Image (tube, rainbow, N blue to C red):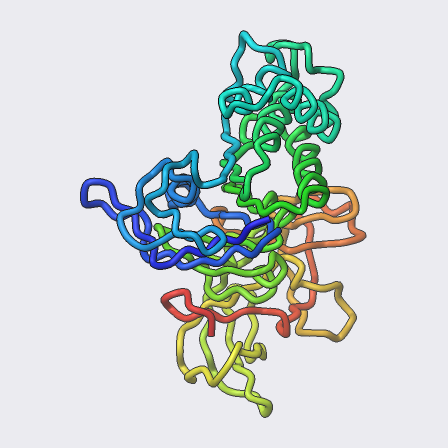
Length: 363
């Protein structure tokens, strides 16, 4: 297991800067996920760590060794790509052993190493097969096995599940998580899928436009986002953003806000820290589960008309409001009969709400 320390890392292409002063620590044995929208720089950051891209500035250290200008093969890193990149004319065993052969390992040692890794990945029965004889999930396990046999200091995964169907992606997520637990290895994983990030990571790094927006444990980012971008990117269904105005202060320092979209006045919301100016226009962030069952006395009640309903069994999501592009999404439990056009009454759990300023910063 190894640690990674990145300091003031920059990357530009022909004068266009892609990464801006990245500072990041990855502890030994951590599973860290880079997440963000397309074009945010997450794959470029991963490739720069691997040495496949040259850093324009800053430094990359692995176990206190500066590897910023070190050849990729000398960094002690193994990378698993989105495409399996398996040799079609080789068997599974040959694919997994190829890198070991190139490094000069004896045939007997290669065979033993591959057999051990194949057992870990449940590939022992497939070693004589060619890649075309395997399913997508099996091919991805072979690609992962090819990385494991090298016994790297750090594993890098670049959207490895993107080519799999939804059911197989769920299965492979669980397999990768279990693999991390067994190996105890340091892993860095890139994805645009926040569900993958939430389910796999010890620590999530949220990127936007080549900058780190926030770093933290999955539930810390979910429950305590630094800004509206992080709040909107982490969580499914997406958080509701509602325009509001600060109309006063409560006795214990909370902000009283008017929310026209919900027809609410003097809704008390606790800012993260400090006072919010009276009269300020703010954005109220309410996750779908921040609406509770009526009659509990935990907040003011609102009634909305559901324009669309997602029934998912134990829970439903009502999409309400005249704005079809940005409806208010409300989590509803124990109402399997709810249908479009039906009324949804819920209490607003304002104690769990977020406030953001005009620039999206958390208040």
